[in-house]
Length: 113
Image (cartoon, rainbow, N blue to C red; front, side, top):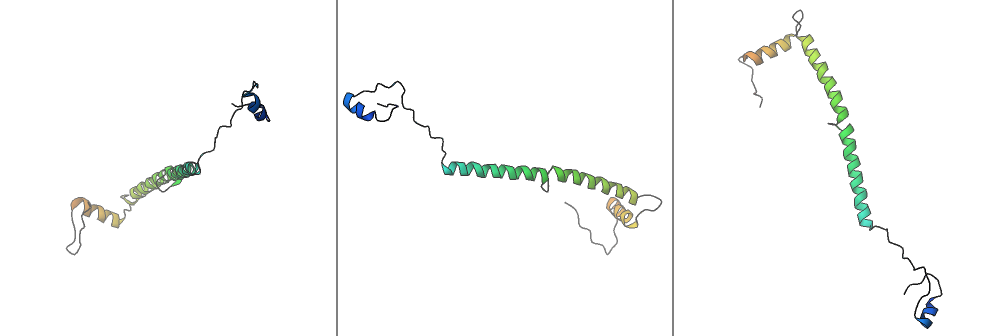
């Protein structure tokens, strides 16, 4: 039998009962195993690293915006290089060879897959 008062054990031995109204409450153990908390901590760290990579990694959201700007700049540059008044001879030659399948006898052509 459980009694809330200290020193009641001797009375229990004498009378065999507890007259106390308040039962003794045991503390519930809220401690977790060290292994479980370590596992949860490692999982949290992994999730935070993955989130940071999704935002600022090489193929993250910030890189997408930078790559989109670079692609727009490259396309504008290509249009400027093909201006009929002063076209870039290297780019014109590359486009003619690619589109018309024309090559010099001493050139080696590597097909793209």
